[in-house]
Amino acid sequence: MTAATVPARHATPMTLHPVRLARLVQIELRKATDTRAGRWLLLVVAAIAIATAAITAFAGKEKGHSLQNVLANTTSLSTLLLPVLGVLLVTSEWSQRTALTTFTLVPRRGRIVAAKTLAGALLAVLATIVCVLVAVAATAVTSHPDGPNPGTWHHAVAVVIGSLVVQVLYVLLGIGFGLLFLNTPFAIVVYFALPTAWSILTGSVKALDSVGKWANPSTAWEHLTDESVGGTLWLKAAVAAAIWVVVPLVAGTVRVLRRPIG
Amino acid sequence: MIEIQELTKSFGSAGIRDVSFTCTPGTVTGFLGPNGAGKSTTMRLLCGLNAADAGSATIDGVPYRRLPQPGRRVGVMLDPTAMHAGRSGHETLSLSAAVLGVGNARVAEVLDLVGLDKGAAAKRVGIYSLGMRQRLALGMALLGDPGILVLDEPANGLDPQGIHWMRVLLRDYADRGGTVLLSSHLLHEVQAVADKLVIINLGRIVANGTPEELQGTRTTLVRSLDQALLAAALKAAEQPFTSASDGSLRVEATTEQVGRIAASSGSVLTELREQGEDLEELFLSLTANNAQEVAA
Image (cartoon, rainbow over all chains, first blue to last red; front, side, top):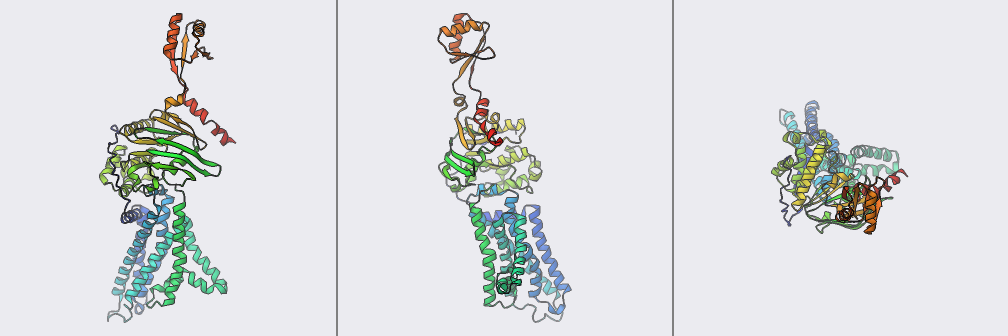
């Protein structure tokens, strides 16, 4: 502290390049895991996946086991938590007020939004890998001793891909809500309350019933993990994704690009 | 080089209007004004965190948002409390270092420079005192080894030793060719280090210049054993003067001129000194209407 001198370098090269997106993604992943809150959330997602896989496999009826139903249960709880993870990836910058530093160092705000979106998608992929590994292990261990039930591994690839798509959609939904509201409790409450309110509304008004089913993410996306996803189901899922993922992401990004920071 | 030209941003009735000033390499510019005068607004507009209604602000001729790696050109410290409470000081700097593309060696160097030892750097920022956050935030600004520093109220929360330390650091930085813009609501915090003062009040620049320029016409204060004799001599020499209530005379002339007149008249001087307008008084008078505005 006595020798308070700043080294007279200032020899900053004029040919500086913007930070590469891959590095920003890496930094966003580090931010998601370098605090206690972030680490616990990820550990809880993993722990819940393991616990639900084990419970489904061991406590369920032995005959009914298939990768499809074990994986569906394994991912069902992580699809509840992944939107929260997505929300926090964005809103923690505002609740902890680190947005000031983040956007001072990277003033092209769209790059930060892109990096967060990609980091969230990567975490969803990682969560899916954990779920799939756990579900495969649980299914294999508990399959019938006389050889697997013929349905056990049916459509395994389709089921895994469907789960992956759903998990990624849920984390992107969280990021979209986070960008739109920039407030952790508000974004989370709206995310949990809105689909319910939507189904109550559309359920009570007959004319809206079919619209309700199309536009509700949980009903529209649940069939993506079914063995044979037909054209209409994909269309339904795409409509729900447009409403719940694309619209919040786009509107939220516009908001973050325009809004004063700090 | 920081160039701010006619920068304007309104927030209802508040905001800033036609703010213009320049900060050149090798100088420390003190940006002074009462709380709420528009210092932070100006700095945030300069750093692209908010968009101006009119006017421009550039860093070496380029708007901040268009700098490819702004942290390597401008070190910014706007709010030392805006840090993640759950990260350690070291991790906070390391994250920024990763964005800036400077290595971990630079993180250690900067922690040493701002006086945060290994123990302090390993602790979570949540338990830091304001002074420690201030040091960490300054470290963050210095991390990319920039040629320009933009610091909002850097002395806030520092003890007298800390303020002295920062003064030495910033003086040294400017003397090595760096450009410093630092804001404060307290004149004495910046007076000792600033080469130039820019005073803002109610969103408008009310004074801009070196401390000497701002002090304006200098007069000589003189006191002698026989003031009537001295007054007569000054009158005879056709030197305009005023008598102050404390019995001293204020003459619009240099100390030498007054000394010569006194000597020729045989006056015995007890006090003879140059006197500029008191900066403190100037600052208070320029920013006085602010208090009325708040009260109204």
